[in-house]
Amino acid sequence: MAKITYIEHDGTEHQVEVQDGLTVMEGAIRNMVPGIDADCGGACACATCHVYVDPAWTDKTGERSSMEDSMLDFASDVQETSRLSCQIKVGAALDGLIVRLPEEQG
Image 1: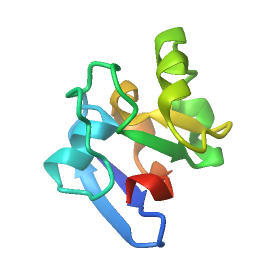
Image 2: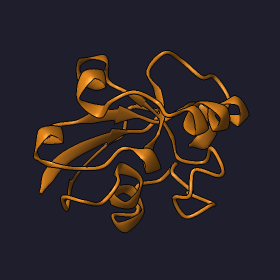
Image 3: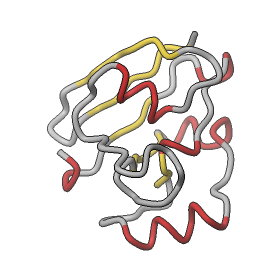
């Protein structure tokens, strides 16, 4: 299990334990973190699970796939650290991960 901190745009923090093998999105949904809707259920077919990965964690979360990059075209306020949380698999290496949620998803 990895502890992941989700920070809403207003600064409200939600620290949850997410089982290895799930995605950051699934961890948010299962723990009712507001701001991650996941309309497509994690199929990388929407951008309603858009997060900003804390810069200290970008190497550990990996790079965006071309499909993920295309889907982020539909998200608002995309930044260098933007990711779709459905595309980030949780494992021991992500224990302590911090992600922030965009204001438009709050």
